[in-house]
Image (cartoon, rainbow, N blue to C red):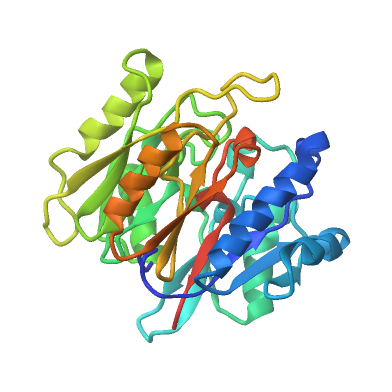
Length: 329
């Protein structure tokens, strides 16, 4: 699996129309469209939409963003869509994980479970299937055989009961070409996803990981963050290079529209690396500026653009969660 900073053919997204959004759906649509347009500045964007929602998607996205009509349940494309890989021959294929609605957190997921294969058939790319229950947001790779993932996802009884570490690593080697897995404890308290790594840390270049520090200095959230940091300290990648950690701080607890902070994705590291750019979240708070500076320092050769996803974040995800890169051939 190529690193996200390698050249892309396009970015894939999906169009939101799920009943979970209820009366805030127009705001969610506006934020999805804003993310798509920001990424479109750097590379082509293609959006999967339910047939009944495709017309509205086209109207809000504009003529320079393609809309592909396929059935789906939800719009977290990183998790339900395929993970794209480059085969030894140089062509691109997709890995279709066994998607089970984030371990049953979502009761309706049949369409999403079939989305990866349906999309690959539609665009004419070969598919590799896996019996491993997994989501794209639960993995991060450096493009050279190293992968970050979390124990709270892979070994969770709601996804892969009884699986061994050796079995999981063999499957990542088979499907993604991974030679070394760095296991993080994850986050048992994260609603829905059970601790996706794309809200914890990501590779920004070979041997360098951007790690998200806790916004609070004590309590369960702080302890979870510190456990993940300790798991990364002293690690080496598949090439034997020591992992260097650089830091960014998550957004503080947010309370919007009368809700608490339990459902919010407050991660600034949940960004999308595009061709020549980075599209990252902001929330309309003072901390946005420091986060922008941290990401700009991590990617000095790319333009960094912030998009407010305050409404989308109420669903527990961010910009990385709603996107997926297709590598260039």
